[in-house]
Image (cartoon, rainbow, N blue to C red; front, side, top):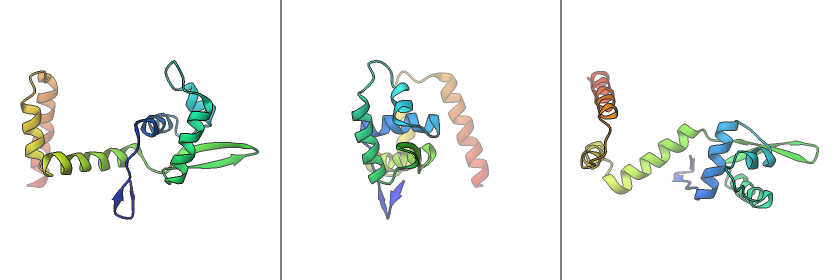
Length: 129
């Protein structure tokens, strides 16, 4: 999710609204509000954050009379890729080896997930060979 060469970073509140919009595909403010857990934020708060996301060109809208239906301009996958790239660059020197080392130090890794990660890395290695 880039404007020019700059990766756009979302606040926690913006990211939460994006998670809901990605799940909905499109929605009105009331649809977004309904998908928040209780206690739900006020309608006006959501509306304000949505307007910021429109200004940032992260979402857009279609007008139906006086109502606006919002939809994402970027996919969850694009955002995830940008955020992972930023995380790897800023904290792991852009090194997959450093990421693996970080997680290898954790004591609460699920063995099943570790086996699956190893299979994925082996598949990636075969594709690159």
